[in-house]
Image (cartoon, rainbow, N blue to C red; front, side, top):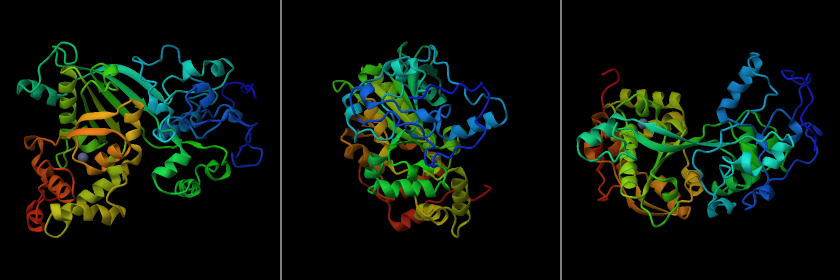
Length: 425
Ligand SMILES: [Zn+2]
């Protein structure tokens, strides 16, 4: 294997090396045998751009932030050959290994060893391989006004451990960057690997030629957002089938989650999920919130705001009956989240059963159950937590077959009557 470049720090190669050019890559890289139990036999995923000969994946680290790293290099602020100093960065709590880690079909969109590369691939690191974590685990306290409300209303009580006297909540959290094993990603989406590679190549305007020129590389680090897991209660309880578990899988909604926009139920649902997680952890179990960076049903916020305008300006005003149609007009589809990859994070945590699943989405429920996780109870959001302007969304979703405890759906006439505010009101 080639040793790291002897070039001086701060110097980039003088000529552009196309990864697709014959001989543009080095000697045969370390193979990745996805799903193999022994990490040294599985092989590290090496996505460095400091030494092209070491690379054994397509794409690079940090998801969409890799572009900012390129900007930092272009601006002269970052040495392109710099490698991270990982001293003291190991996980605050150990997660796994779990049996699901060693099933090539159960986890296909993240690297189960992503948090522990400094340990399990130490011998490679000692030989100057540039291997970087794709998962980081840390501990924190969080504070939410909705949890204050739950305490004031008597629904939650401070226990001094999970919910502290100061009303802050103790959590363990994990940030995960996507690492895709392409053969099984293709399987999940019912297409061939060839079609998947070619489509990814073409629809990123040829951003990653390796997708089509390097069939020997099966792992791709896509330039997209990852996910964050918030864990409540002892981490060991999460995979323990004898302990109760509450889970909410939440897809990012910046407008509601952060800014409190009242057109949807995202933040109320997230806060309700956190409340359920705390309650279950306090009862001796654990809670898990998975927060996916899939803004606006993975259509992005520009599309989302265009849809809001189209909804509010349409003839007859914003109505539950037209809720999905307006999205389809702008985006071509109602939803691009495709929950097929979502259960991977739950399998990484070793989850086999969810006692309280805080969601009304059948897409999420179906994906989780199909992946082999048992769901005992589905927990809808209490009516009093739904903002008035979000009634349009709620009624439309319920009519579209989202889960309701009593199976009730509104008639077309009733749907047309559920109206949101006009634009600018
Ligand atoms: Zn929302």
